[in-house]
Length: 253
Image (cartoon, rainbow, N blue to C red; front, side, top):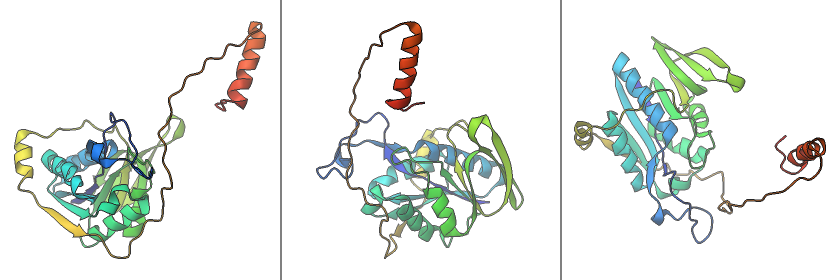
């Protein structure tokens, strides 16, 4: 079974965002990076499927040179080889640009299954996997909580709203966007780290003619603020006023 896992490198969640001079992206010189958490769960799901059904797991990533940090981490955890579409513009690329770049790199591989994280921790569009499935011309399912492969069919458990779940069967090849927390992550061993140094990372040039469909005009860091408002009156009057404030001003009702 040939499985692709799309991995993204994102700023660490503990990092305090700082914007560049044009306020169109973060100041990358000050950033520490890590593997996108939902992608880590997708990688673990792929490794478990390979351990059960045999085959190989191929890590696919798009971004500047620094992305090789998380590619090496994925190889150390057990992936067999990697594809890297290397271009600086992909570091802040939109979902369509990233999907187009990945699709071009993956076109000749004939993967049976493609796994991505549900969404990225930085931009959070939750669209890259869906667009990639369209570009590859394969079926897809989102918010996947369990994956079971049976011959030429994959059966998946999807998370719905209100605590409901849905089981669906799909023909292979297919693409699945994986929800965080569906499994217990493994970590790279010393043996895995040493073995990763010898594994192939094939660099794929950025396809010509690809341009972003989304333009970031301006970014702003949220301002922390706290405001306390005392509500006077009887308990009945205060509760009525509280409901009005939550509905009309806070707009949480």
